[in-house]
Amino acid sequence: MQAGSFFVQPILVLKDVVIGYDSSDPLVKVPDLQVFPGEIIAIAGPSGIGKSTLLRTIAGLVSPISGTLEVCGKTLPESPPRGHLGYVPQKLGLVRHASVRHNVDQGARAGTRLRKERNERSTGAIEQMGLTDKSREPIRRLSGGQQRRVATARTLAQRPRLILADEFLSELDEETLSSVLEAVTNYVRENDACLIVVEHDITRAKMMADKLLVIDDGRVNPFIKGTKALEVNI
Image (cartoon, rainbow, N blue to C red; front, side, top):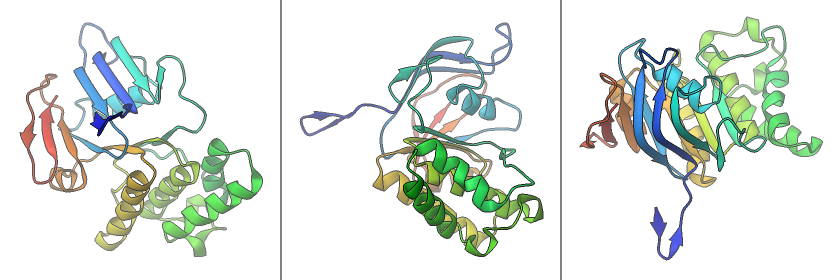
């Protein structure tokens, strides 16, 4: 991507990437994908077709069967720079016996070693997610939607360049969903970060994203116009 005379480096590059757990039966093939600063990409498709595995592969938790995957300037299996990649897994990965503040602090710690800055990041992220009154509550006492907001706050406190989110909007009522999505979208746009989100609601996926990747029969087809997003079948 070029802006005027400047070349904008992609945050994520997949080239001839084959994803899955069995080389004889791969789940997803991605010939060429580049994600640039400020972009929001949604991944949709039937359950069990490989959406979460694609996200986990980008996160470095699953090795690709083949191909080249570059994240934040580093080619896997080399890790991205500390704090550059934030991940909200479907099962959230929260410390259930610990407080909201403790969990969000873990994200801040991944992003900075400065104590004052960590405190400011954690406080700000908790406020953005509307959880200030729950700051001392242990995770196990929160509803499913509240726990998803904690996981999102943890990632925002980290301030990564790339956010991977696996259905992070599920279990949220419409009002809360709108405020959470607005906070994350604003973060992406204002910090030249990017967001890749697995989203089961295809209408919502089209509305939130710049590009929609639909996993379908393991192939990548030409772009098709969506409601807001560009749509490509994988």
